Length: 622
Image (tube, rainbow, N blue to C red):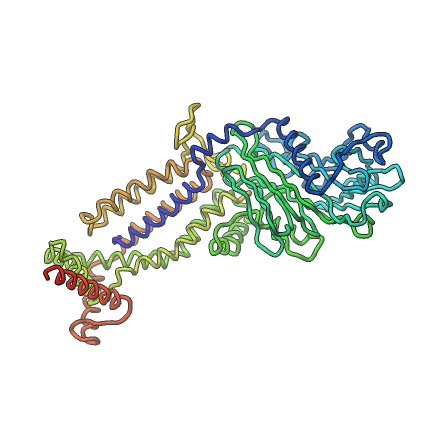
């Protein structure tokens, strides 16, 4: 492995380290998190405050005051009742107080307690619709609706007015899907609303529960996400309190956990949205406190209904992709964006290669550990040509080392560095060797290497799947743990992370042992090469065991591949080939071995540097 290969590895390590540091909360952020409100009372107070602000945004001159003269006096009195809608995958509970969904349970997924997973219940979430009337306003959270037309999958929550009119909230849970249609329609309410009214203000809030064991790791993937109309989705900060007021109209707003989301979709789009996300303190049982205020279309005449939808379900790529087809409109909702698959080129690799390969292997009935093992082998096989080219480039540099040593001995002084570089490049040209030949293949491998870095933590299929001593591949395997939280390492030690790091250390030791050129000139690079695998222990200790397992297997295969390539490469034969190249180049281009391409450009650049240096020296003498 030559200097350029080491530089390539260093760059890869730097990117990984930088990405981890970027995603790791700072000490200031962790201190700030201690002061976040996480009690139910605080959430309710915040919701009331935001409802008041929403009323102000609607230009309301009066506050809600229910008395015997109100059209909705009787609706303000009542007893809370619950209605359940369910299909094979989800069970939803609706309350007549506010006419809203107050609880959602996913039947096919389990919580940490082993029971069907609860996305939220009455203590976690709330939704209020504010309608502006001529003489009074309607705040649905204070009203008791009448459930009518109730079936296993449908219900109409009806808010009756004294004049015989009413507001209908129609809910329809789709068969075998996580989607529910939601429609608002006014009936006989024309005289109640001002003629110019065409929007309803919505205040929605929810505390995202901690659904996984690793708080810090889950927090990295828990964010309020939204999609502007005719644009890609965006999200609020995962690690700190954040607030956004998008100027664009929005197709949907999602209160997202690592593996599950509640998505509110507007067929006619949301406007004037105000979105906030507040991280909750570790140990509270919650990840974030989400709030969203927005306006939606509303026709007071009832001629055109307000059409919306909810998605209560997993962040599973193909499930979300299929849910797009259930949209009430023709537009592509792009719900699959809730599964973050990395930067554009890496996302493309994951979407069209990694996911399909993973699904195909999973369909064979294999365990998730075997699936990841086979994926790693297949990926390594695909990038083997690039690996081989990198190895051969390194081997060529190694067999030319005696000649390089002669040049180094010829120019021992620092001021002769340019001459030494020039002769070194001339030597490489003479033998037809490109010192940069190992870098491009490494860059080709890098997107594939990073693709699984983004895919594995978002693969819900790994959730609660065991592998050897790890009971859940989607979170860390704390086979060694303690009560005290130690800076940088936490309160546990992940065995798969240790194996991954040890494999990297062994890989480094073997590489440096085989590396027999340039070590005296690169002590800093050599030290960095040894330090990086140790740093991985601190970086990846809180990451999922599935990801560490993949890197462990990948590193192990990499070491074996390198050993086999080294054993099967005849360096004497390779040197003879280089000598033959030398003679051929001399015959074709002359005794100087002049060629075009990158090598010639590098040599020309070095000559120009030498000329400029000589000019500076001459001016200095004058």
